[in-house]
Amino acid sequence: MNVSIVIPVYNEADRLPACLDAIMAQTVQPLEVIVVDNNSSDDTVAVAERYPIVQVIREARQGVVYARDSGFDAARGEIIGRLDADSVIAPDWVATVQQIFSESDVAAVSGRVRYYDLAYSQLLDWFDLRIRRRMARLLGREVALQGANMAARASAWRTVRQSVCRRAGLHEDYDIAIHLQQAGWVNRFDERLVAAIDCRRVEASLPEFFSYVWLSPKTYALHRLKSRFHMYPVVTLVLLCYLPLKMLHKGYDVQAARFSWRQLFIEPPIARVNPATFVD
Image (tube, one colour):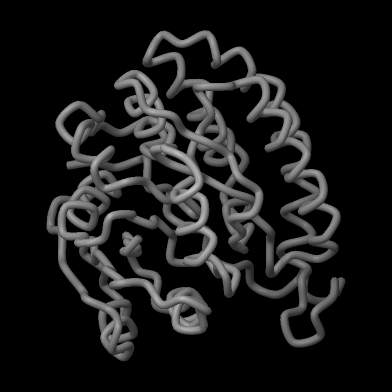
């Protein structure tokens, strides 16, 4: 099965090279890589254009939902992979996508994430996987998708293209999962599909961080689904971890690949823009 990879981007010049390098290193190359520029003001487009496999398209309407739509609509593959600009996929990611979709009639799949630029990341990886496994069991057919590491059948996307929500204040990847499920499709969590992501979300202020994590139950609630109740303990746990994660992320010395107290007093990195907070 041909796999197209779509990456919506907004001011991601620093993170995009690692993402694209990982795609170039795949054991099975994708059919195409579509980078959707959503009005970036930095060198994001110039970075993307350095890679021969990449097709850059532009979406002027501000909002990740519009960038996603444009990328998915332009994709020519039978399967559409979706990544974030800071996603660094495993070398067998495309091959694993092909295997998963050839094994069953699943409509969409999301997988395991690992974390980089974070001290003691192996511990977080361990906890994160167990939480995802548990949530997959609890949510069942309503299992969520994660835009940093997901893939969907193009045919399934076309059936929900007109019905998915296009508004601020929800997780658009969760929303796709919900609409696919309501249309009779099956989504799945499969830990064979692995991508590493940055934990930079914790660089946001506590109110901003809370607003972001609260979108998980809120998205289910907007669709009047009881699955939102399964998300409340997760939100509580994530909020309790906010300060430790913030310290481990800010104190991570990239050159030494370890925690550094000195690093804590260096100017903090810029938090990633929450893609759910703005939609034209």
